[in-house]
Image (cartoon, rainbow, N blue to C red; front, side, top):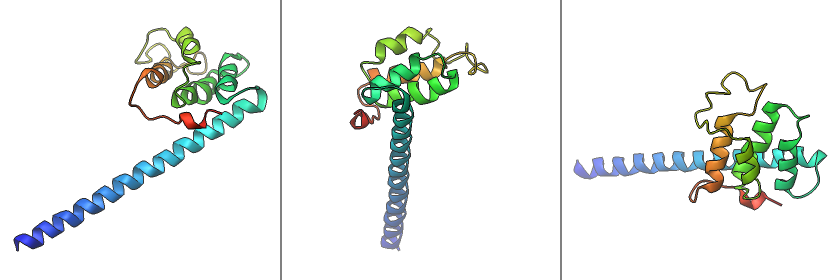
Amino acid sequence: MKRVKIRLAVIIAGILLAVILTGIFAMDIWIRHDVKENIAIAQENYPGTAEEALISFLQDEENSFNDRTHIAIWTLGMLKSEKALPVLKGYYHDDPKGLSCKGHHNQMLCQYGLHKAIVQIEGRWMYSTTGLNR
């Protein structure tokens, strides 16, 4: 009886581990796809490497605040772009919770998004897609 319970616990743990690893793998594929897509959008109009094109996209005020946040800022954070760090910090107003931009993303860059990107770049052990920065 005790062996049956142990086997059952091992099987359940194995299934749970497989589900978690599958979820992590799927998220990695999804994030990498979005990073590649955002790089392609930026490189359609701006020359240079991925991070150069994304920085130009961010600095071009013809692009909407929402696009600048979701395409450039998020992607630069995922690329851990050291080159973009001073640019991102220039737009950041020390609002880690994004209270100043809540409900105003069509009027200003998302401060929470900027905070997350800066933390992502400066952090050591966080997820990264730096290999896509070409």
